[in-house]
Amino acid sequence: MEYDLRRGALHALASTAAFSIMGACIKVAAATTPNELVVFTRCVVGLLILLPILLRRGGAGIRTQRLGGHLIRAGFGIASMYAFFYAIGNLPLAEAMLLTYSTPLWIPFIAWFWIGEKPPMVVFPAAILGIVGIALIVKPGMHPINTFAAIIGAMSGFFAAGSMVSIRRMTDTEPPARIVFYFALMGTSISAIPLLWAWQTPSLIAVTALLGAGISATLGQIQMTRAYALAPAALVGPFAYVTVILSAGLAWLFWDESLDRWSMLGTLLVVSTCVLVSWPQKRALAAAPQSDKRSA
Image 1: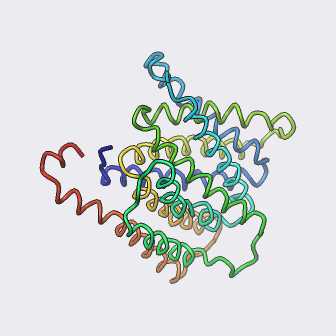
Image 2: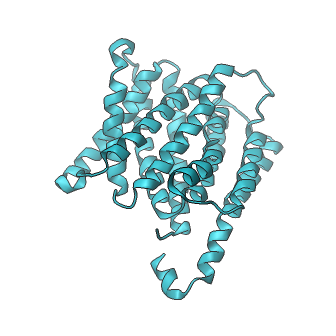
């Protein structure tokens, strides 16, 4: 596969901004809305956004020979989503993001085992450095924590890693919009089942927040899918740490979760992680023949 880390990183950063907004919207909605309805709404909004776009392209826009791959991606994604949204509703926003964005710790190992992408050695210390930075931002253990919600949040990171690697596995034949469409279609179908016993009419504020979450999540999904199509999973994954930084800022702005000097130090460490993990790829591109650079 041909790589373009620079473009992949830009798409990854765009996805972090969208997912940070999604997290804030979910936190607002989760205060009064059951998790089952939150997950369903996020999926159905994405489906409604993507369906007209793909239908304008005709059957070719949604025709696929990779239904099994899409189902695996949807299974990982929905499991991660249920766990993630539960954590957001029961933990401080930045802390919930920390637990979910343990994803880059799992990605190199899953990608290596599943699709044979052996990561450069720098990825391993970089992932540790990133986790240290996140820990400085949210300082886990320095305030009471919902242990069950924390475990569920950590599980969401593992499931998200499986989902991201499954995306990478399909991008040789599946364009980003189609991958996100099938996730929305299958996710909507799966998440509609619990509504049979968990339906609750949401308030106007919750509806607005749920729509915002669905729109921003769909945009984030498209950007993330493009990022994983352009660069190896292990190299793109650490950029997800930026979501924690942005979420911490939103938490400070709307919920008075203040940032101190340790949080600022953590921010620097996270940014350093992104630079460190991209350095081997930059050197490889710099050493490549000009014809190879144009094709990257």
